[in-house]
Image (tube, rainbow, N blue to C red; front, side, top):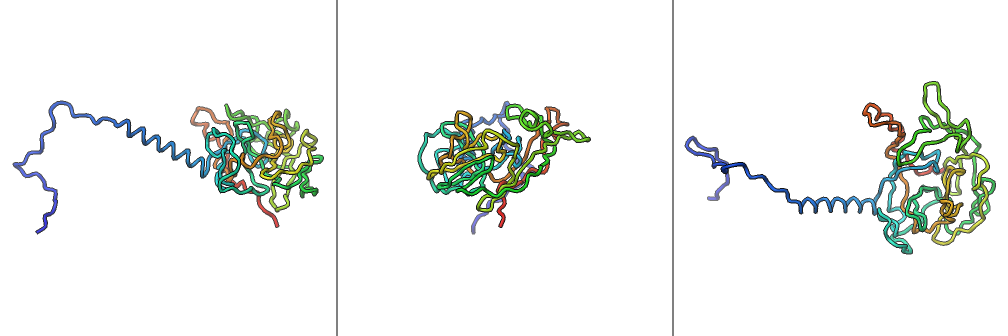
Length: 303
């Protein structure tokens, strides 16, 4: 007959095992095991950031009105394949080509590391290989034809402007960069950034707003032909963006950018900070903007 393992309660004349004399022995920490666990955790995070997605913080106003200083984004790494710039830390030397590579679409918002610069920019792709790109009097011209532009109108960004975020940028929208009436304060004390914008539609139907502040240095450029394996990018805040129109010496991208320098595609906003909160927990609710979480960064396509 097969035996069974059962738990028996101690009888009245059964005594429990005696505890060891003196102070109970304290279990020792297995530091080697702990360090191995931390190592694999860090490796998993870095791997996710390299191959799947990573967060990205908006430190400047070059992509107004769609992206505000303080927006936190998710950037996917796989849509264009992988290149030497894909690892979280840009430590690899330039390697030509991409693994599982594909070109972005016109209208995609992309992360770019400029050649020779160890930093990330965020811009919109407007020109692909073979395109002839020109900017004339502030109007984008692709392959000899001006992109469709709507009428000048105003976008009112509520609860914005004038708040510094230590180490991460500053929300300005003031007279030093814009018009004297751009930053206003309503009767309830809320700051408003009122921007003049023009809606632009690319040949593939992707539509988005661009800021139009009047004459600026980047209003005339080209024409140039985008070389094979390159893209031409611009910021939506056309008069306040260092992009493909400007040389690297002016903090621009120095013309069309090699596709190897594309770090990923911006997908959506996870949350947005205003910088108005302090260390006082009662002010933490002021640190975040409502209504930004989940906002898609894919320009809609019109028929």
